[in-house]
Length: 112
Image 1: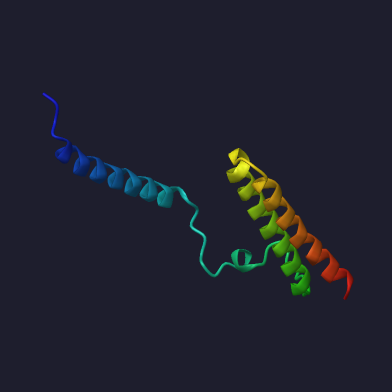
Image 2: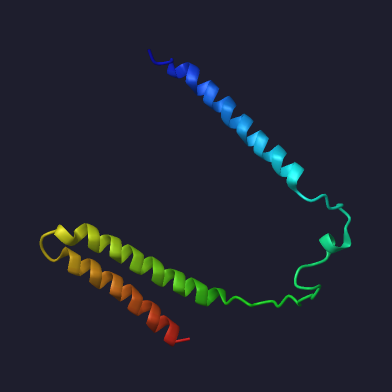
């Protein structure tokens, strides 16, 4: 006769919590006792070297152009995958529209 699953679930949960608490307690007992205000513990990493934070300028226009390229090619890939079994010229039309939008982006960038 097997035990009832509704009885085993709380037993498993309590056992797991007990094992986790036991592991934390043993880890706390085994860890070294370092005072919280120890100067070595509060020292910065990399031997105390302080690095200057450099500000990097992000060109948002360039980022948006790359985002548009990604969007166009991502949508093109999805449309081509979906319309692969479509009969007729529809996949070619989808590709032509996507490539025309890329051409418009390239031409607009050159005219700046």
